[in-house]
Image (cartoon, rainbow, N blue to C red; front, top):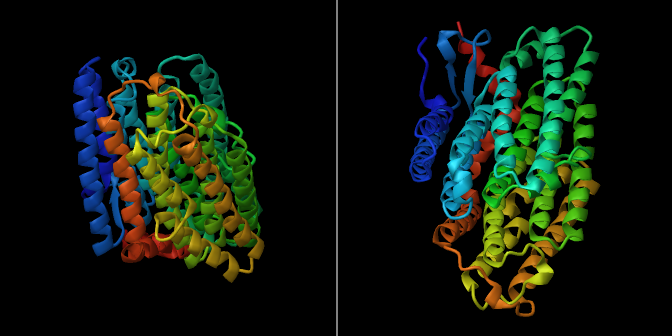
Length: 497
C-alpha cells in the first residue's frame, strides 16, 4: 500500500521550510521569504485538501505501508481539513504581520523557524489518527512554543515562560499516564480502532472513568479551561504580539479539538457523567473568562480573557454531543480562530503605535486612524456575535442545542456571556478611539503597511466567513458528523485488509 502524500503536506511543508531556514543561518531576509513561501504553499495544500475531502470524503494514509491499526495513520476528515485550512490562513498573515512587528533581533534567532516547527506540531495534532502520535505532535508544538515564549529574554518572558513550561511538562506526564491506562484496556493506540473495541467491550469499564479524568485534566490544561487556566493570562501576556496571535488563535484550539475527538470516541459508556462534567467546567470557564474580561482596562488582557470565554462556549456545544451542538461548536471554533487573530493584530498595532496597553492612557485615535478604528469595531461586533457576522451562527446553534437538551441555564449563560464580550471590547473601542485626545506627539513613527494589511485581511476574512455561513453549512455538518456519529470516523478501518 503506497503512502498518499496529500494528507501529509500540511505537516511536511512547514517542517521542511523550518529545516531549510536552519541551514541558511541568521539571515532574517532569507527567513522572511522562505516563511512566506512555505506559508503560501501550506495554504494552497490545505485548500486543495478541503476540496478533496468535501468531494470524496475522509482521506486516510498510512506511513511506511503499515496499515491501521498497527501502523501510524493520518486521517483527514472535514473537521481536520477546516482546522488545517484556518491554521494555514492565520499562519500566512501572521508571518506577514511579523515582518514589521517582531523585531530584527528575534528574527536573527530563528523566530520563523520556530513558527514553522510549531505549525508542524499543530497540524500534526489535527491530522493524526493515532492517540500516541497526538501526544508526539503536542510535544513538537510545545517545544517550539517554549522557545517562542522566551525568545528575546525579557524579564516577564522568562518569568511567565518558566511557569508555562512547568505546567505543560506536568500535563504531558499525565498524558502519557492516560495513554498507558487506555492501552491496558484496548491494546491499541489507533483512535478509530479504540472506538471499535470499546463499542464491543464487555469487561470492567470503570478504568475508563479514570482515563476520562486524566484526559480532561491534560486537554483542559492545554485549552485553558477552568480551573486549569491559571497559567494562561500571564503566560500569553508575556511574548510579543505576533507570538500571542499564534498562541491565542491556535494553541488553545488544539486542546479543544483533542477534548472533542477523544470524548466522542473513547468515553461512550457513561456519557451522562463525562458530558455533564465537561458542561460544568465549560460553563465555569465562560463565567471566569467574563469576569476577567470585565475587570481589566489593559487591551491585551481583555482579549486574552475573551479566549477563555470562547473556549467555554465551544465546549458547551461539544458537551451537548448532538448534531446541532457540534455544528455550532465548529462554526464557533473556526470563527474564534479568525477573529482572535484579527483582534490581537489590531491591538498589537495600537500598542506599537502608542507604546501603551492601558485604555485609560489612550484616546481620540479615530481622528488619525479611522480605518483601524472601524475595522476594530467590525471585529468587536463579530466577536460578540452580532448578525450577520461570524460569531452569530455558532452561538445560535449552541444555544439552540442547549434548549433542545433541556439545559436552559447553560443556554442563558452562553447568551449572557455575549453581553460581557460586547462590553469588554466596546470599552476598548470607545476608550481608545473616542475618548479624550491623548498627546499625539508621543505616537511612534513606525512602518505599518504590512501590519495593517495582515490585520485588515483577517477582519475581512472573518466578515466573509460570516456572510458565507449558509453556503458553508454542508462543510460544517460534515465536520460535526465524525463527532456525534463516531462510527463514521472509524469506517475507514473496514477498508483495511
